[in-house]
Image 1 (cartoon, helix red, strand yellow):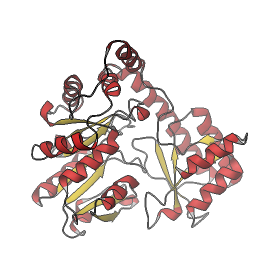
Image 2 (cartoon, rainbow, N blue to C red):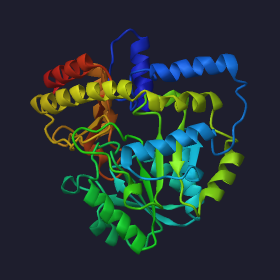
Image 3 (tube, rainbow, N blue to C red):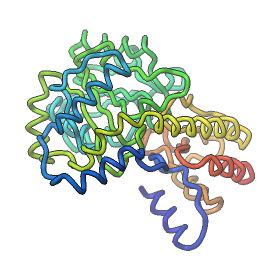
Image 4 (cartoon, one colour):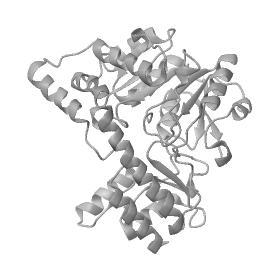
Length: 364
């Protein structure tokens, strides 16, 4: 957020900015989604919905799991949420008590850590390496001591790495054997390059899964997501959701129901991300940034900048001021080692990716 603010100030002063900091698609919501929203404004009262969401949207989400993963998810286990952010809050509150120990990969999405800490949960950082593809492993979980929960994200933010089917199965099996609650962040599913997105539900029907319309369907500001909730937690999630939020935004729920008819348009966006990814993976090493995490999915490249700095925050500030390139320091993603890393987002225009690499080469 600080980088975005600095970039906005630079633009307001009349200087150009290449936006490689923002973790959101630069494309609008699909045309079918926009049409459904316009029609709803004319014909629907837009009142509250049930706390777990519109029945028709929950039905479409259930069908999505049959179509994409070949798994049967009962509608009764699906909760529609105000983006994935409220999904994480509901999941953590329902699944963990104050003082619980929950493990997550570092580098990883900082909001996991921040929400857990705000709820009095102890965060156990798994200091992953390139050899792990920056993902949790059974070996690291065994070394973490007693755990109440594990969070996995595949594709992950910021590294873009993914768990393949055997790796996901090994983690779900370990969690079941050790009575550890598994929460799988699958919000970047559909944005993958070569590897298939594997849902935790394929190997553990009782996993708690978080997903969103924000990334694959380009609906970030609509604030609409969903959870697949284990049977023993669905009552708690419904009660929490009704007290905290009443319901997810009704207009967004109606619009999101049409999103599953817009797969072709979403895939066009993924094809553009693939082109942008290729530009960065080819041109960043030529610019002097060759130590990159495998970008299997999502729209991020995580780069080691230790040869240039041990202060990624200052490094990103200088980069913006001196080149107009906005990118994100690694300190939020990895509190202990992020001072030597930065994240580039390739969710924007392909021309911006090429120009950013050219400027970086001259600057570095």
